Amino acid sequence: MHGAADATALEAFFQMMFLPDNIPIVGMLILVFWFTYVGLREARKNDELARQGREDEILRHMQE
Image (cartoon, rainbow, N blue to C red):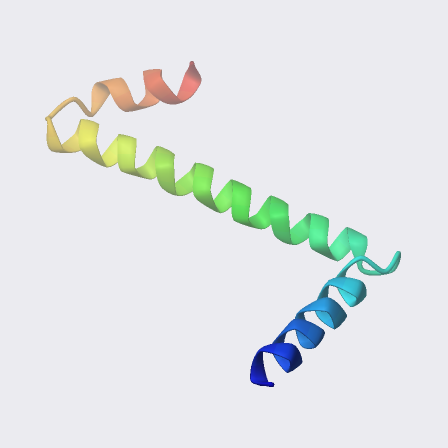
């Protein structure tokens, strides 16, 4: 019985999420998560270069 209530709540959430007024908000959330991932990935790469003592390569790597 508890699973049926969860499925209905999830269905209601998805129906609300894809209402025309909410689609831009969903798109913005996807973009926020994507650019956060890209930023953290690049920060990790730069930290690794700094750890290896190759700080001069960081700017060159960012401009590629």
